[in-house]
Image 1 (cartoon, helix red, strand yellow):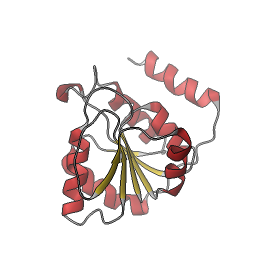
Image 2 (tube, rainbow, N blue to C red):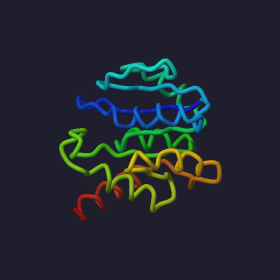
Image 3 (cartoon, helix red, strand yellow):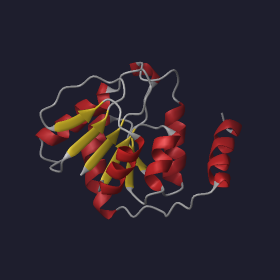
Length: 159
């Protein structure tokens, strides 16, 4: 099962769901797809879409997922890599009015450099990144406040 996490921002993120649908249509994605869409409105006969998911159900879905594709929110990323999941980060971009700035790109790149995730900015490359996940072995994330703090401090210091 593939779990898509769009977070709870009040900006739409249909760009990612359009790319997921395209990859379903091309048969690159053949697994069941469940979406936590937040405020993004999207219709699909191929995806099970929820606006919000209860905290316990959310955790259960993360446990069951073989792959998680998430926006670049730190909470969604960390809660997924803490469970040892293969994660693709698709940052929300300012130019599409998906966020107020492009900070999610830096977050995605940082987690990628550290070996926890892969990321995709150009949605035309989503299928290629999904295919590459078969050979991706994410670095084990050890839960520690200092890890989160150092990631945030590093981000602040370098921006």
